[in-house]
Image (tube, rainbow, N blue to C red; front, side, top):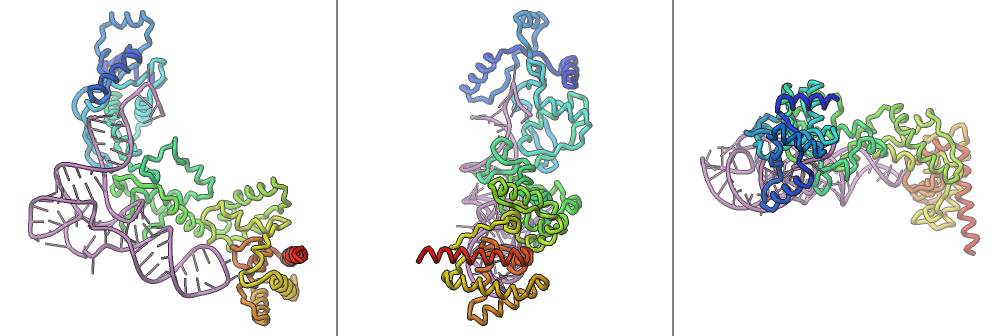
Length: 414
RNA sequence: GCCCCCAUCGUCUAGAGGCCUAGGACGCCACCCUUUCAAGGUGGAGAUCAGGGGUUCGAAUCCCCUUGGGGGCACCA
């Protein structure tokens, strides 16, 4: 309705006209221009129809499109990032269609009408619209509104340097959020594409607040920038480390839940994580999360009732199965002497180190055997904190289970 | 094909004529720290500033050409 009115106004003022050219005619024009090595453009066949001609076309049942008169001359504007730009009206492809034959408006027209309606003062968009800008300026003028300020930002590129488009690339911020990137990192990363503070060294981490202070279109580049996912991951880690503990809990909880739901769907018995418990786990994971989505692989062992352990991981490089069985048995004994009441990292570590020393084992080997026995993994948060997080009972049970697993294997081998 | 834009390490960039034998960050490598993984620390490799002409006492910085890359030219958005 708004577009229709605007179009009718342009028609009334003869800034636009009805065009009855058939698609076949337009294609023939285009083919001819191509053959002549010219730029495709509308030739203006219907630009000056008489009332009689129009009636004749209408009588044929032709539905007209509405074309906007582009005129002649050069259109100049001062872009906030590109500076002075001039484009000749003859390079605009002829009078452009603003209303289709079915009455619906085209993009270039609707954005201008919308922006005019909303009295936009600044249009900040991708460089891909730079060559469309003269059309928009002409439309704004015809609509009788003040032409907004333009700023054309460099494009964000795929690794192959082509434009990152909505169609063939992942561009939705929601997708990155779903992958565990946090908004602070996304904002920071995007700000750094095509812009730098200019304050030289060590100036890479910028929060929204700070950006509103230091960001300036004057310093924006003109060349496109490749979206570097590795740098985004680094920034994401930086920002995750800066989150307050309770904030991290509320942001990572959904990711953990999702991973646990998958395990449940596989038929595994899974315990429900409590918020208070997650809060105590924050120190174990905060600096180990490249993305929030990594939380599951770091903590899932705490919530599954039955751990699946690969016996090959269980035996440290310098040990054999028998030594591992002995090591786990001794570790269990030592931990049991600590008991459930004094079960703290500060109690566990010195005693287990002492055990290793007494038996002439490398502490790392003993620790690795314990680590795999209670988590099923070789890469985990710090061992003693992990044991505490797991709890006294579970730790002992898992040490026993691991030992039995190796025992069973040994028995079968004999 | 026509029009427009761009051009410094693999990537993001600092650099607005001498401060540049080109600085930082990501990534990579090494070492340190260390119970694993991370994080952190230190160091390193990595750019004849796309190429060629000018201008200038002096050019990554200014001008021209070439090359390369990108974007736009729809009854798409």
